[in-house]
Image (cartoon, rainbow, N blue to C red):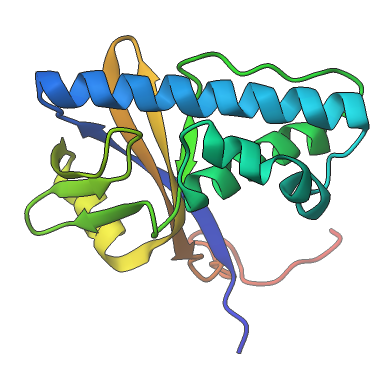
Amino acid sequence: MYVRVMKLAVEVRLLPGPEQVVVLAKTLARCNAAANLASERAFVDGVTRRFELHHRVYRELKEFGLSAQPAIRTIAKVCDAYARDKHVQHRFRPDAAQPYDARCLSWNLDLQSVSIWTTGGRLKTVRFACAPWQLELLRAHRQGESDLLLRNGKWFLAATCEVPEAAMNESPRGSSGSISGS
């Protein structure tokens, strides 16, 4: 049986300490500088597919200070931008969102903390806050990647959740239950 799912982004507020803020900011800036390097190469060489761009820039991104999986996620971010528009060279702000997958980010929902890769090493206990309903959605439906965001000086993670769609109500209240042309 096929079950339709909808993707939701559940956004939680990170509560990093002062030292963690510095490391997260440096990481975001470094990842976006690497994205700009990959974007320039993609645009100049006309290579916007992941496999080809990976072979052209992966080593440079590693030498630039990114670990393996963050380099791969950065290449994907660049290719996603070119999938939307191949006619302009895309540039990424130093504080643009950075995607993380399960190899770079792990959740401890019981303690409401995450362990996250940074250019300064893994931060193992970054606390987060969210509403109880958000925590339940994360527990039941979190799938795939999460994006690290900096907005108005505050840190967030936007986690992808795949939630099964509710069955359609084919007999709404107040209807006769039949559809007719009259």
